[in-house]
Length: 171
Image (cartoon, rainbow, N blue to C red; front, side):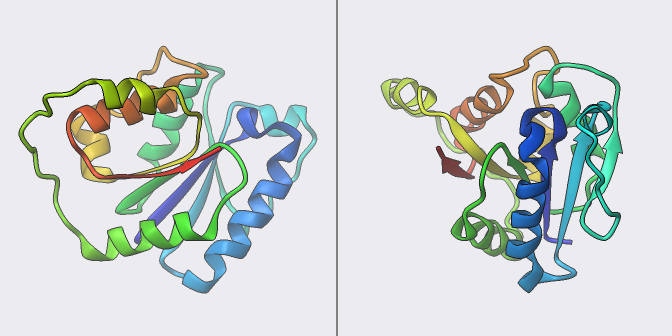
């Protein structure tokens, strides 16, 4: 398995069916190489949404901050690349993750950068999608389980601080 796309049901809200349909449409050319997971803390039941098993795999979790929910879903995924979706998807983002997963590179720790200003500028932009190699995700311990809305931005900044290659999709 190359790519695991992970969508949080609570964050997606009523847009979840549209986001799932879009994810399915964009990943269908790569059948067998992509999986779609939905982190669900009963938001699907509250929103009265039916998710067919052929569309996505639902990972149940307790009500918790976003970071903990995404960590739970990631622990059930099988992809070499993990893609965390927070809004409409871009086909180029998925293609870039597939290319990165096929390359199968292992994480390399690079020397630290001398200028921190670029990270501060980078951190102010909302991320609609974050793609990261599973090895980097595991190495950093995943998302901060205490963070909710800023969990994805926090992980992206920590990955950039380690000079990890990430694939982002900006809002």
